[in-house]
Length: 351
Image 1 (cartoon, one colour):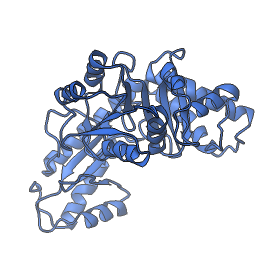
Image 2 (cartoon, helix red, strand yellow):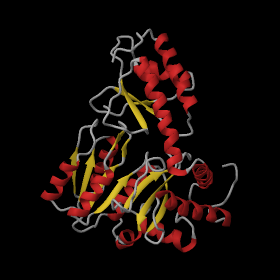
Image 3 (tube, rainbow, N blue to C red):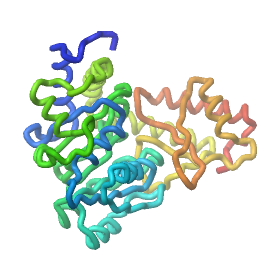
Image 4 (tube, one colour):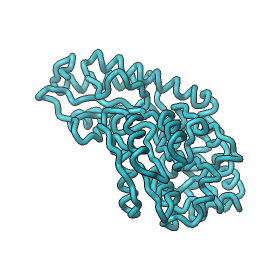
């Protein structure tokens, strides 16, 4: 990031080209059938770009499959753009149920279907493949997957399950830093949606056409963030790609799970969930527990966790991803035990 390139500099244009090509490689898709469209802004920018650009202006209707805050965000985007949609809501601690989706497809006609791969508010991994195969049987609707916190670490065969659009951001499993997001898009579907965009900045087709024509963003790109991301992609390959990164995250998760179980913390999700991106834990049932104090004291020890993002359950979340290793998870566990003792919590914790 310490190198300073202008957005029209030849070296930077080559960097953007490398990133677009390499992300297609990570996704395991054919460049003649798919393209990569980077966008300035957080992952939600890419979500909004897909929804506002690829739902037909006339007769468009989206089936939004949601089992947490991030699925609900797609519904909010639809509302903001006055896009007709049906919200198929599932409990936060459960996976999207394929049989319910099938019933929805029988009862109505949709041009677009949206699902979150890893619902980061809880850690639930949704059955993206099963839903995709179901869609192939019932409809030719465009299939959109929010893979924000899973892309790069959880294998997904986009072609086999018919994913037309997949979004993620620089600062998740690829281990870059915040500042841009990207869309892996089916070329035919993308260019067939030309003229549908409801915005200027989020117009996916215009963004893609500009990049294809001269390698440049339409508007100022985050140059330093993209330089960092190129290095992150190199390190992903050195680690063994998606499989290699998944291996480390699974080990992080295993260390965390064993240690938190010994301390008495109770996971939000039951054993039917096998995700290894983020893990949610119930608040201890102890009068001395206060989450703000718990969070702050861990922060004082340079350990940062996530507050819960559930509407009905008091919980907190611990990420297993990023440039973290089993030794880091063991350090976190030591710090959690230390803070619990400082707060005079009974160990093992009462769940």
